[in-house]
Length: 344
Image (tube, rainbow, N blue to C red; front, side, top):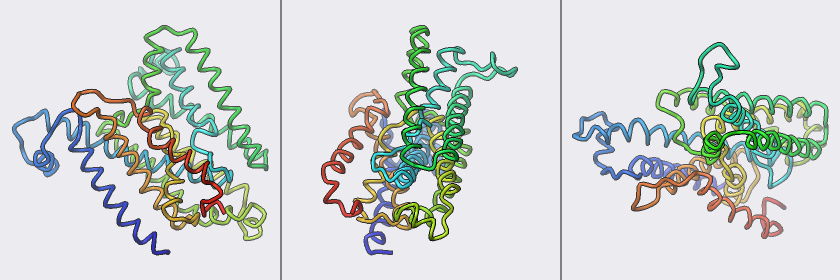
C-alpha cells in the first residue's frame, strides 16, 4: 500500500463524516446544530416538525446519497476497466435506459399503477421502483446474453450503445402518445433525487447496494489482471468470459437498484473513478476500489447539499448539479490524457 493511500483513507473518511453531518444540518429549513444532535440522540425537542425533517427526510436522504454515490462510482470503475475505455459509465450499456423504459411504461402507458399487469393493486412509489428495477434487469439480461456470444469488448460496448438507442426510441414513442401530466411526471422522475428512499425502505436499499459493493471488492484480483490485457489475464488463470459476466452482473445490480430508487443520475459513475485515479496516481484496484467508494459517497453528499439554493426554499434537480462537478473532470482528463500517469 503506497503512502498516498494511507493519507487519503482517513482524509476521505473525515470529509465523508463532515458532509454527512452537513447534509443533516443544512437544508431548505434552517435547524440549529445542537437541535440536530439532540434529535439524533433521541432527546425531546420543542419543535416536532424539526424532528420529522431530520429523521424522516434528511437522515434517509443522506444515507441514500452515501450508498448511491458509492454504487455508481464503483459501477463506472468496473466498466472502465472491463472495456479499457475512460469514458465508459453505468449508462453506457443501456442499463439506466432500461430503468427509464420501465418507468416510462408505468407512468406514460399504465398511468402509474401496475394493477393492469398484475392482480395486486400496486401503485405509487412501490410501482415506480418495481418498474425501474424490472426494466433495468431485462436490459441487463440481454447484455449478459450478448456477452456470452460476443468475445470482443468493443463490440459488446457498441451493442450496449445500440440497445440504449432502441430503448430511447421506445420512450420517445410513449412520450409522443401520452398526456401532458403523465409526461411531466416522467420528466420529474428523470431529473433524479436522493429523497425517494423513505426510512422504511432504507434497509432494503442499503442491503442491495452493500452486497453489490462487497461483490465488487471480491473482483479486485481479476480487475487488476484485466489491466494487462485479456490475453495476459487468461495466462494468469483468469476466466475471461466468467469475469466479464460477473462484472456486468455486479454493475447491473448496483445501477438498477440506484436508478430504481433515485432516478437516472449522470456523471457520478463517469467522473468519480477518474478523481480517485488522479488522487492516487495509480490504477491498482486494491487501492482504487475503496478510494472510489469513498469519493463517490463524498461527491454524492456534496451534490445533495448543493441542491439546496441558499436563502430560499427551492431545491434544484440532482441532474442539474452533478454535471457541474463531473463535466470539468472529464474535460480535464481528455485534454491531459497524455500527461496523466495512470493512462501510461
